[in-house]
Image (cartoon, rainbow, N blue to C red):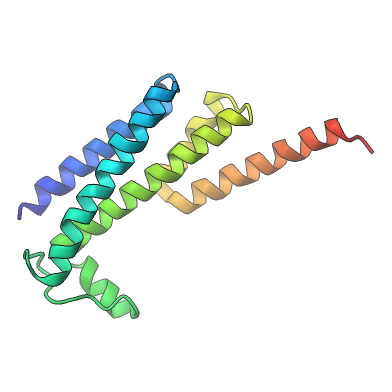
Length: 152
């Protein structure tokens, strides 16, 4: 398989989905398109590749079924071209899923887009750190709203 081509296409496709998430109007059609056409398609690509890769039906350069219970087993999988590519698609799909959740939730809580974009960038580049930043931001906003609704 041409792992470089699959990696590049997946990476560029995910970047396009992130640009749409960050800058396009967030109507229901666009959000649904990002969910199914972005996250769903990346997840399908992962599913189509992972089983034949792990069972040896396609050559990924790693050889054999990986042992996910040890660091060495995960390193072996990710050190092969196929394993690194499928691992990256895994990250792309899940980070985009989290990014979509953050964007929808931030809209719900009334956060301005200019505040969302840096957080979405952190979700894209550093997944869990971006999520933590958003949760902290939301916590501060939620507490202010709660204080305004129920003053002491």
